[in-house]
Length: 462
Image (cartoon, rainbow, N blue to C red; front, side):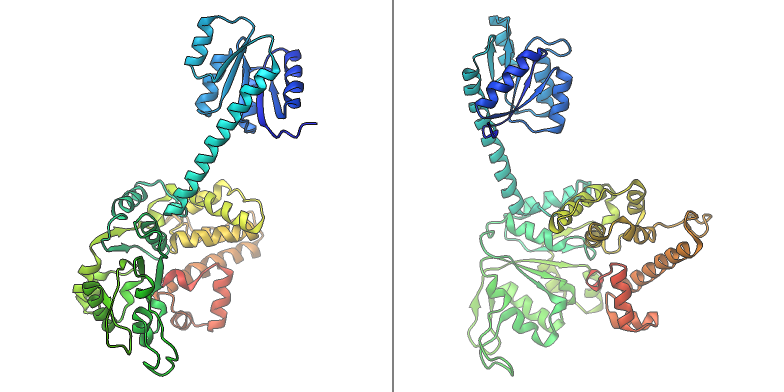
């Protein structure tokens, strides 16, 4: 019995005897065979399956073979089609080939001949699909695999990345927390001549002030208490590659001066060393802060700002591109469903409407977190959060769901209020838990519990 090793093919013929004989003979030749009795049924089969080739009778009552082939190629332009007829003429053969048929055979069919034609067609189609798959993998490796969006603002971002990536110019990525600055930095690296070297990222807010110099430039053994061995800093790690400086606006002024010198001279000196080391590093920096205001306040060096701001690139917040929400939801839901071995839950229409009205303070990162929660816990765990972002009309009163019992409706209102309240505090205090807890008048432990319940992360607001 055949295992369908030669591949799946679709046979279309209005004669039941021909369909039966074709299925039997092609199955013996190793093909898996789908049959259809008409053009309409063939199109329905194509909508639910993925054959590697199609064989169609030329004369059929609803759609003839050529008309069916044209409809099929409108859906799947490269699908190989073999046309068969009992009334062969040179004119019909020429027309069939001109309209896109791979081959033209006459009845009565010799199934060994048809099988040979189909083997070549299937092999060619498999090769074509393999090329497309590999090309897709290469394009994903080139850096846009996680950046989803077709909004005009995102198309501008993609175009800018393509334009600046091949050069070595310094890029300054600006945008709110969670807009995907590191993803764009990686995209720039992967589309640059430095792509074969490891991408190096450092979060400037995560490094203690007294360790910044060592973190960036490295140190020699014994340079300070605790320096028990030589350390290679991030600039040396990124030699010949790209160094991503995230949240560069939080750098201390002292390290800003040393960073400026490195950018000017392309050399670093390890802490405790005398001799400088040449490095070849491309800088991509990112910030969610107003650097011009920091310069005006004397908290950021103007010369460093101008050195970093060679190619400015702004990433739009999610609320400015609501048309991308469906694609982002599909992307994240599918990704987490695959990770956890679940079925991706389809967002209900009312949730999509709430998502479009929600302000997304945590931007794409917040959406990603909520999608993970939806895959694990269902939409019921997400809906109250998105409802908190839907601003009521001035005359609308308190938004309540009268389909719920009083206690449950009240609890949902409380949850909406608490999440909105904590979201605003986290944003105002830039994720500093101690300050948020004091402002809210609750213990830090209770604050962490509420943040966990509402899917909030301090990292989204730093």
